[in-house]
Image (cartoon, rainbow, N blue to C red; front, top):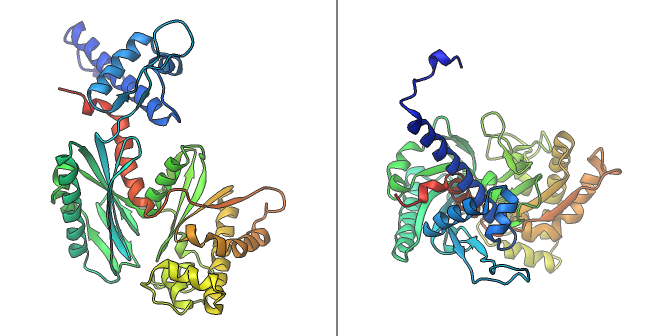
Length: 407
């Protein structure tokens, strides 16, 4: 930018202070990020070596983060070398928490997670939200989130934000849910939700369910898997492509609608209005109905039938595994992803689906004879999108740690 358009300086002190404040913010984030990403407690000396900052600078920054209840100090440990014992630093437990919220077709929930990854509160409410009223469901969710936030704050936990996972196309630029076929929701204005307690004071972000579940998976693997496809199997089927530690959202943030991949153009009708989508074969409702079970029943019923050798259950799983394998093969051929994680219902169903999925991948992926393709169940656990939402809130804190510093 030409210097003639730059604002004039009002003296050297103001310019220096601005640079120092910006530098401190950067260094606080750098130090906190190293502690949060570490697989084991680290010392101030470790942080100095990793960041290139002086020990005095690291110590001052750590003192601020400890005072703000972001980091915690353990008991000093003698390292076996000369000098004072090292004081291990870890993310603080039970002091700050993010709220992860989710509305899915057969449940809604609220989960609070702290910086150490501990779950401080967990509310999951089963229900049938097919063709539901979004205003009613979202009001119910907000009330439950308010109860959780109140309980945590009464225990001395500072709730720093909330993130909502929805199973559909979320348009953040317009603050709307464009469509969630399995809920029967379309063009839902989300702006009013931000004015409802507790979101009016905590803030609220809204994201696609599979994207947040992928964040939880990335965190569960201690960031050791930089690129993978996360498949979220529920009534609907979502997908999220993580590349180099970041979720690929596409141009409008709508990528990953794996459930609406066409398996057979003349196949059964899908909730989206098209025929032959993957969800119509391998979604939870499709599997339960094909097995002769109540679509709202627990997944363990399907597993139990399969374990007993029940023919309809085994046929449903074989058909679902075939369809999933066909869809995944197309995805692999298009993206060259080398690692696939099966989450949601596909975690417990993976032993029953494995052979059918593998057969299609072997037959259809062009590189299959030459390159290994890893397919494995998720480590993130049940309702992973809620965990991912809480993690995203706390990642925002890690990017702006000065917001937690004393005034």
